[in-house]
Image 1 (spheres, one colour):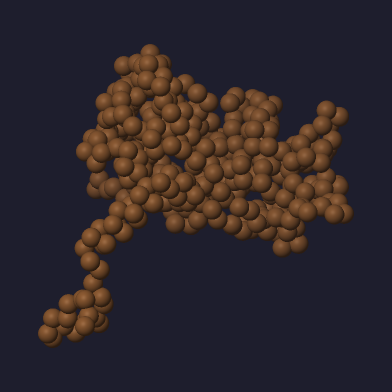
Image 2 (cartoon, one colour):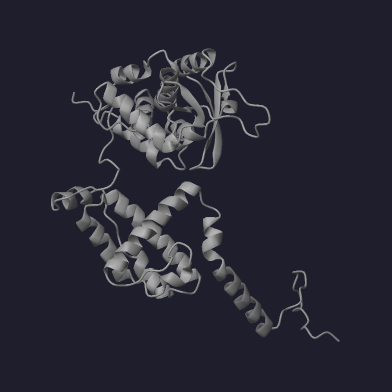
Length: 354
């Protein structure tokens, strides 16, 4: 005779044995404990390396704030237990401390988002109570409308490497940046600038490029965008293709060496004698080079991201659909391309007074 009750008369669902409630509860609790132990690692395994680096920096700054208060902070990035004792008041105080220090308000908002994310993970790990997590979630950042008023009341409104606004390039300046000397470094710089201005690549994406990514015959560039974990193919612009062919035709494009496991880097480092080394350019080297090229034509503070801003602004100004701009620019959402499109719209287009 079965230990399980018979199904109710007329029940059309397939019969499945019912677990005793005690065993069901025991299994559920064991599953919760297992999930809690790996909650941080599971979350981080799904995020891009750039995202994790930024979150680590955000939590390091929060730890610095806690240490300044006399509270020893543990490893908030890796250890759920380090969140023991974190309250909404500390999170709120962290926002005000950053504002007083002069951190950019958009950056403060990003760090708040990081804290809320890891507070949720800590709650799911059983370290924070659901009530404390709800209070942390209720902490609000600085809205677009509030930011000008807050900035007007503080002496220092921005510290760090990020600029308050991008350097806005004119078409004439962009054309001058593409005109580089006919030597190895100049031909490399011309290709580098064209890929930034005409294709909107990020500096980190440029640093990853290898000779295998460039197809001169087809006029195509294939590259990886870590932020969205996606490989894209761009048809090279006329200027970019011309620069790439010059780079290759003069022997600046490195050839694979016998036994080499991976193709050589596309953009190579500079040597003091004006030639190029076998090593590839790092993200930092690319940023410094763009800054120097800008100074050479009278532009102060130019960055690789400014060139990407020029690309997106130019595309939006010429009527590029936001969805196409999102795809080409490697954005995860429409928020950023929509902003470029809206910034280039004429507010009173379509308004008639007669």
